Length: 311
Image 1 (tube, rainbow, N blue to C red):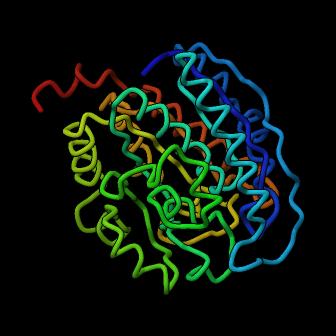
Image 2 (image 1 turned 30 degrees about the horizontal axis):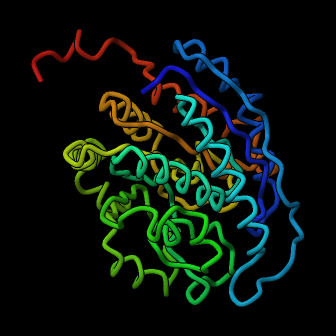
């Protein structure tokens, strides 16, 4: 992982029903994301917020809400992140609703293809985000980005990527899943993506979950793109999201997840999505996102090898 980090603000809630995620990038800035990264030894470049279509707040059309606007945002995001990666920087997309990750995944997948390196995605989320217009009850595109990344969706969304699929389904790993739409489930099961839902995490624990995933990513020699939706966390610690689903990751589970990702040395890009300050209390959700990102970038209680040499 390079110590040159680019912050890319994506102030859009166009992929969701509830307004407010457009304020997420500024909430992360106010919570001290850049200062934390500098403290961790990073050289930080904040390129500011991207500009894209405003939210027209229209109903779905043919099963997609705001299709054209989402495509426009995704292309802008992809161009910006790809440019930062070509400059040798580690990109952090500050969302914005999770539909914005169509653009970030497209950029990283294109970059990796040009470097002849596989890409794996770690999708940390309460939701599988594997809907299409035929399965989505709402038509909200923030429930579709994983499907789009693996080759299912409207041709205009698929065209954002360099290829179809952008990412092989078997290279997608999901954790913290606990809310999947009825008709979406069949697509997820048939897709071939790797799902560690909350029941599986309850049974084997977050440590074994992450060991299994990171081992496979390492064996594949892949670039790991981490897409972190804050609704993966339990609402008791992260209330500022549009869709609060009880039973999410605890603070310590999330910390261990992030610490193990850092220790693996595999992460090469990051999304932080779905912070909604309009639904938050004292910016607490942005603050916990910054706190967890600190662990992703190497903050430790003690240097790991000084205490655990016997493992």
